[in-house]
Each structure stands twice: as structure tokens, then as C-alpha cells.
Length: 384
Image (tube, rainbow, N blue to C red; front, side, top):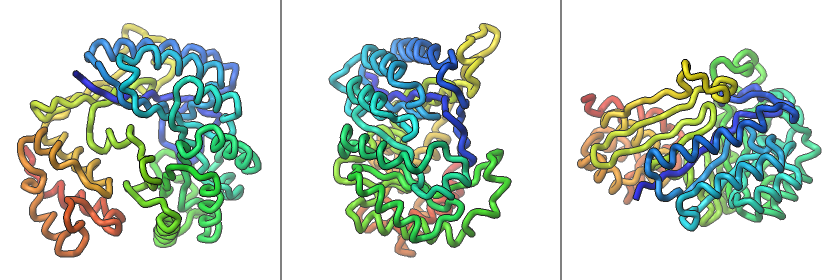
């Protein structure tokens, strides 16, 4: 049996935030491409499931972009189509959809619940209007309480909320007030992202209005500690959760397990556990070309991941989690234990007290220095 999660990238947004480097296209509700999208992505899903012999899909994640801008009717078509195509509907453990409050009205939220979504990820980012305006975050702050209350009523603690630290004009009292408001809706999951300035985004040109790096780090740590005190322990670099509410789909990424990626800009990876190699397909981040399917132009690129490349990715993704990489899966896949590949790095970090005592994983404090750990580990890895 070949098992794979499914990720569908919905590239539409009501507007593009200054910090965003995901592929997205601003659209109005009358844009005909909104109607074309579902039919095309469902055709790709059917083809991919058949070509790769996928017999079980444990997780589906519809992200973006902003999937909720499709509206209730289009979302219903898409969700129904996905459900109809699943080869083993009883094997689906989790079905996540991302939404933004300004487009997640009651009709959208009820359509999500009624047509199979079991987990809603809502992009709040901040309740502080000056911070939202400074990064051109779409939607009015005044709308947030109404939409979050409704989402909590419909999804209960299957609700996940996204918050950001390091935003313009953000102070510790403002950030902690944001967390207090978010927790008042009893979400099961909180994603806490430190704002990063990506190249070729508008934010890169106005970095002077952002908190200094040391202050931004201090804000994130204060937010982390507040969430943990409130009963949301950290389980990954940017994620905090009530017991049993971890994102099953994202865990597939961190374990480097199979997933199909669909939609313009969507990327998927399939692993051959026998050889410890992988294959990645990424659809071009160009909505019009993806829809037109001109025979003279490829709509996706493919990449072969040899064993050294897959080992490196497995380390990169696995050490993001507080539980560390799945060492049994690593050894089964690559026919050697992980600790045999980076023994010196592990010894150094153990001496510094930055590795957990009984698990091959970084401590909570060491996760703050993940990039340094990875650089040392990659330097030590055999390069052939």
C-alpha cells in the first residue's frame, strides 16, 4: 500500500501582505479563474493518485494563498471533489483548510465543516491595528472577534490560530494581549511565527520600522513562555498545542513522509524507503500558465533527491520538532543510525546541555539556535 498526504495550494488572496513570499494572486470574487481552479486541481489530484498508486491518504491540507476567498459555493465543490477522489475515505485522519477572518464568513465556515474539513487554520497574525496596517494585512481588526467566535463555535478546539511576533509597532504588552485574546477562543493549536524579512518582498524595503533583532527575539521568547504557561507546550519550532491537537499533516513534512503537492506553486515529495532516495514535483508558480496547459510549456518541474540530499533534508526537518527525528524510520530508510553520521556535532551539543537527556532531540532552548546546529551537522555529514 502506498500512502501519501495531499497538499493543495490555492493561490488566491484578497491582497498580498508585505511579508509574504508564498505564491499568491490578488483576485476579485468575479474572477473566472476562481471557477476554473477547482476543476483543474481535482483533475490533477485524480491523475496523481492513479499514476503513483496511492491507496491511502491520511491527511489533506488546503493552504495558500487564502483558500477561503473561493467562497462557500466554490469551496463546497472543491471539498466534495476531494472527498469523492480519496481511495480510502475511512483512512483520512485529518483534513485542514487555511482561512483568513475577512473571508471566513458563516457560509464558508459551515461549508468547510459540512464538506469534510476537520481542522481549521485561521490566520490572525495580530489584533493590533497599527501593526496590521504597517504590513498591509487584509481585513479590519474590528471583524476579528465576530469571526473567531463563530469559528470557535463551529470547530471547537479543532481550531488553529496563527500569530506573528516582530511586527512593526509591536511591544511586549501588545503581543501578550494578542495571545490573551487568541486563547480566549480556546483553540487547540497555536502557530507562533517570528516575522522574517524575505528578499523581494515590500517589507525588505522598510525594515527600519521593525523591532531590532534582539528585541524581536525577546518578544518571541516572551510569547513562547506565555503560551506554555497557559497549557500550550511547544512541540515544533513555531507550534504550540493542547494534548492530541498536533497537526498530523505537518508532522508528515517533518518526518519526510510522502505527500502529493497540487495547484500552482504546490510541491510534493515521494520517498523510496528501499533506496533512501526521493522524487519531488513542483507545479510552476504561474496561475495562468497552470490553467492554460499549453502543450509547449511544462507546468511542473521535477527533482531527484539522492541519498545525501534526502539525509540532509531529514535532519533539517526532524530536528525542528521537540521530539527530534524519527530515528527508527531514519535507520530503516538509510540503513545506518542517525547518530553515526553526525557524532561530533551531537557530542558538542550534548556537552553544552543543548541535547535532551533520553531522546535524540534538541532542548527547547536549543531550538532557538537550530540553524547553528544544522550548519554544524551538515558540515560533518559525508558528502557522497
